[in-house]
Image 1 (cartoon, rainbow, N blue to C red):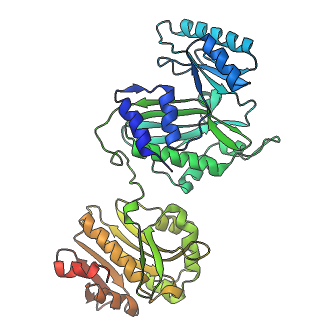
Image 2: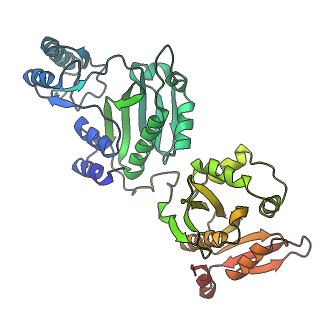
Image 3: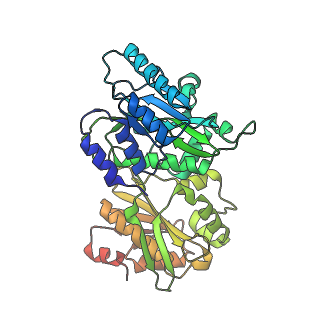
Length: 430
């Protein structure tokens, strides 16, 4: 669950360009469910000692200054503080180091956190706004090794679990995170979730110019953000228009019951639908495969599966029918419209698993695709149908397609023009 409004309120309180106070950054991260270490602020040495006493030991202490973002370089971090004397000494050392590092810096005290002793791993998550690609997410080794090893991978939001997992697998850190020398493996599902939540934050708030979560410490599999910084740079572009990849269009989700009484959830295809697509392919007869692919196809190759499930939502409409009543989610059919470069014409295709053919699923999917195509400004859609595919020809007639036969091949072309109100009425659900 994301609290976009709560995070938006923080940004509205800080409209000017610059780094946000760390407390504000933590509030934004918490609004998106990112695991943040408990952090308390002490304005002076006396408060630091009192907080240490109430929080318990061991503690980590770090400089709080809007002008010094790289605290390690400035000598602004002390770890594993185990008593009041160590807290006092650490406070004085950090103050002295900060004044020496940058005499004119604004010092707002120190931040205290429970010290996660001997973490199993340190990673980084971050993002930068690129002039050409918009926000870019980074994942890799964290802590002091970030600048030394240069082990990181990049990804573009919006992310999904498949892309997040691939992003992690592209790094050397992924091998370490699987566990070594009696260290337990990291929880990759939790790390995927962090990447997804970071991605959503970037999708919702285009004013984020930089965001560093470094280090993210992992202990016994669980990650926690220990240090973070966020640079705001206002933009005139509204949310989602700042992305080079269109986000998943939730507005196309639709639940209905077909004329045959089957309840289905129609939604855009997702990259993680690959296993569902594979399972549906297993129940297709050779006739259905021939009608759809115009040839013999024994199995779906990984490249073809990726092509069917990883789409450009701007250029392509691909809807799947999901049976949510089954014990496990099951794909019953898919329909798609692939637009040409100027977005005025598209080619459609429909595929329904053999056990569910003739039950209104293909018609419902194609109708929804046509409604979306009309809203997007398509002028026409067309598709080629084999003469043996009498079901598809009948569906075309029912929905108002113009049908013409190629005398040489015997194939039929189905075409629907969106400029005629009488034909548009045929799109509506009965």
